[in-house]
Image (tube, rainbow, N blue to C red; front, top):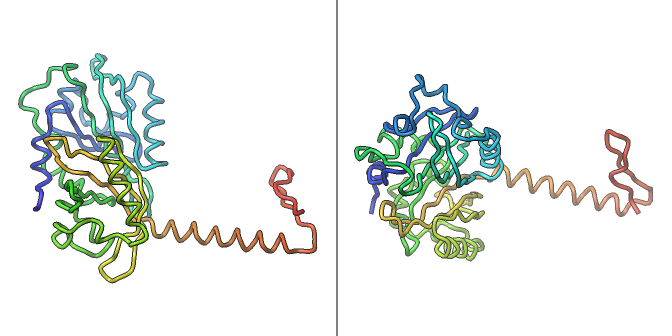
Length: 283
């Protein structure tokens, strides 16, 4: 089954929005009713900063930094509109990355609490189709949808950059078929956790099988949205981290070799930092 993601977006509740932010935290893209519903009239919209939605602008900075550090961040509380009225809302923030794994902007999902604001009946989409499609097709992160049995029912085109398979080749295949056998228990546990905690992102690291036979390290989250009538799937967001894992492994090996050298040396060895304080003294 192939899911038309823009159509999923068009069936989204009228009290939900998605905006895209630049790496500096200014608005790049937004749904057609977002600015009017939030009572902003600034043109061009890129002059509006994410911090403008918060009573304390430092909250916005902290949330974006958390998204950079861990890949995602969430918030529940008060947002401020363009006319300084307040609405209760929840935010889900995802950091977008370049091929070099550098922050390249943010995707922010905004969900207004029921009955907090009368929204316009014609507001039926998170994003215009072209913006939503561009977000998925050009994002360096991969988005996939799984059914309750764990079969892939949608995956964004960026999957090809990670494991060589096209979306058409992946759809209908159990996600476990692409996972290293040693990581399969971890993946199954991640999915079970997601099922037990709806709407809560569950983090995990797994090795994904490449079409050429080798495995690629990935990290990401799985969020259970099976009961959401507009999604009806487990939503997975993930990206490749093989290069980072290689760097971490090299650093670990270097540290082990250095420690072995120091601990087996007959000479006394000490390490001093830039302030002159000892950070290590061999026994």
